[in-house]
Image 1 (cartoon, rainbow, N blue to C red):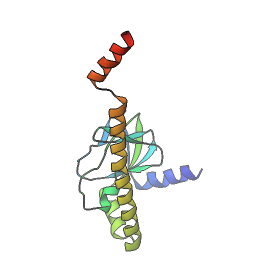
Image 2: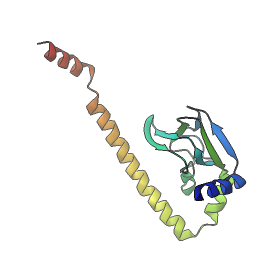
Image 3: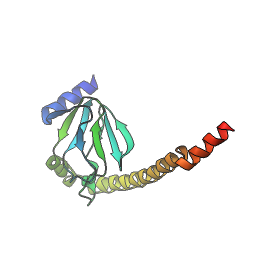
Image 4: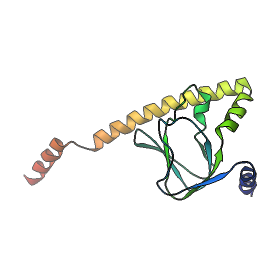
Length: 149
């Protein structure tokens, strides 16, 4: 019930947009812009063509770059299925940030920095795991030769 009330409030304030399966909300490197809250469906976040996180109903995306000097999107985001989002205009996000308590903004920026460093390390681990799990052609040939002898 509470979720429906929240969605009604969001619907009264922010426009909604529907993204079809595989449609991108934004690409890594794009200039920052509007933020989004997922009303239904799923969104995949990717960085350097590596799947990072699947987001679902109620989750926000595209808002965190406003806390930093970085003016470009850190991730790409695309719909995994037909997805409805609330569009939070960039101007609204900037107004909220400018009116926020400086302490809260500082703490949030610190948390985002920590999370960002964690994501970089996670990307390195994923890449390493891919290399370990995927033998090169020479290794594959060697394995096949062992199996036939």
